[in-house]
Amino acid sequence: MSQPERHLPGPGAAISTDLYLDRYAARTAGMTASEIRALFAVASRPEVVSLAGGSPFTAALPLDTIGDMIAQLVHDRGATALQYGIGQGEPLLREQICDVMALEGITASPEDVVVTVGSQQGLDLVSRVFLDPGDIVLAEGPSYVGALGTFAAAQAEVVHVAMDDAGLQPEALRQALADLASRGRTAKLLYLIPNHQNPAGVTLAEERRDVVLDIARSAGVIVLEDNPYGLLGFDGEPLRALRARTDDGVLYLGSFSKTFSPGLRVGWVLAPHGVREKLVLATEAQILCPPVFSQQIVSTYLATQPWQEQIKVFQEIYHERRDATLSALEQLMPPGLSWTHPTGGFYVWVTLPDGLDSKLMQPRAVHERVAYVPGTGFYADGAGRSQLRLSYCFPPPERIREGVRRLAGVVEAELELVGVFGAESGRQPRSVPRPGAEDRGEPPTRPRLVVPL
Image (cartoon, rainbow, N blue to C red):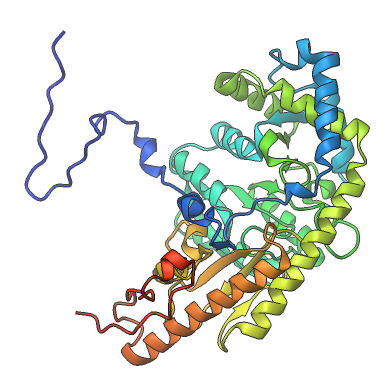
């Protein structure tokens, strides 16, 4: 069989070693590595204080008990736990999911729950069912990087809506819809994380929740509520979910990744009956069924373990680490920065002084052995260069303080550099280690100011 003809690139064209470059579907153009995944190789080094990834502190789980629980599950029900299941998910788990959602005021039927491989698959399923190429999704600015990647893969256009310390701004939402209407366009979805948002850490204020729902309903926009952090607040009872206020035009995404185990990859979508049917068809075409073993582990955990008490343990741990982060920022950072004050969840959103760029600053930070996520990863339009996300969920308080100390030194060096050369000078000078410092495990000296050539 003859091979397809290959055309050499013209003068000045980029050369790729990928022989399939001209065969990919158009939608692959929206597939790019996330800012967070690109940091994993560096952030996982033991000498680096990682304030980057949002990994829950699973070491706080009763691991011996859970190990025994899983062994008993395999002993008693291994033949079914290791078998295929149904596309919608295990019936008992769907009933238990309804009990979990009831803690946030949601009344739901197990028939309207679709179990997914983490809520990330839920995002993908909703995108497959609702989004055509060129459709518009409204999303908070900044927004969850995994959602932005999913919408890009669906060839949708993301339009960001401004937030403040009280979450999504209703007037900004009205303005975004009006701007679209002036161009003859409409939005299909409004994606938001109302509780302890990723990455900003802010929570949509109670007085704004019904207003946002009314605006979306009037515009015919479906609300996609993503709520992995709703039970991880630090102050009192959880806020009532948006889906608890109405089942008209609201789809709900939930997950056990933050309250139990991200490694099991168990999430869900709560959707009206007709939407549910299409989600099940989409998941069957995609993966046949969510893993039965993972589902039965979660179901057994919910049935046999004091899981609500375990959530309280997580709340206390993350509360202490949030406090350590805010205290270190207040005490160690130079003037000119600002940051959010989360009431739950995993993240603090930091805004740098004028002239500093979190993306360009990152190599210096890595050299100083501290990792964060630049703000650009949380915008679809290239914004966020003056911002960054810090995650406090995984490191203990003393490591958090050390990480903030290192980051403060990086910021001070950047400010000094900008003060000498201005914001537009090449601001990635080489850091200069002391002779033999790497061998001794010592931190490098403060980078020298290097005149750009």
